[in-house]
Length: 233
Ligand code: OAD
Image (cartoon, rainbow, N blue to C red; front, side):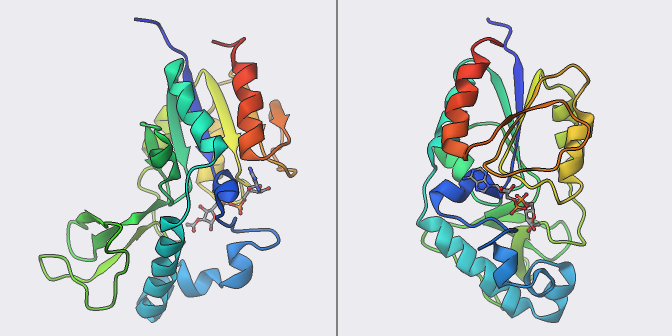
């Protein structure tokens, strides 16, 4: 069996732009149209759960009409030669749909809901049943909530993500402004000497790191990165 190099990839909202989903920041971003404090914090959930449920019901509906783009697809093909681990801040399921198999969702998953009761049991939604309403309960009788990590909540997958990052032979960042912690801090766990690449059509502030920047969108950028990887294989 070949000794494969470990390629660890941190993705953000820009990964899914070419599929038709919005970013959060910048012009046309989600947080220009909705206030984070109204829909994506634990306090919002306590204050107006119906509004929060509606926000994620709409996001799920949007997701049902979009497909992986070239970026997701090329990334999935890299599993032929590399041990690929994706750490994503995205709550969409486009990496899965493209065929990637090792995905850690730092900020939760749109297509899952969980009980607000003890144990926080998680349930998968089906394409036929994309909405949850106030009064929709788990079998034990507790209200269901989106399986999303809201601002003010712990990022339970962070330790796993750190462990993965520390084992990277190559580290790639795609489509994230690196504004949100702890996710953005993962770069600090990349061991020294490990090559780091970044794909983004816009300037991203990455202080003090020796990074090879591919200033392109996810689709074109991934094609270019795949070519560059040939020398690292
Ligand atoms: P941002 O909206 O902060 O950043 C998106 C990045 O994608 C920017 O750097 C853009 O330049 C880049 N981008 C735009 N078009 C692109 C394209 N075609 N290809 C590649 N990149 C492109 O999104 P995130 O960094 O993912 O959390 O945001 C992090 C977290 O903040 C999200 O997970 C979300 C949000 O609040 C929660 O809701 C908990």
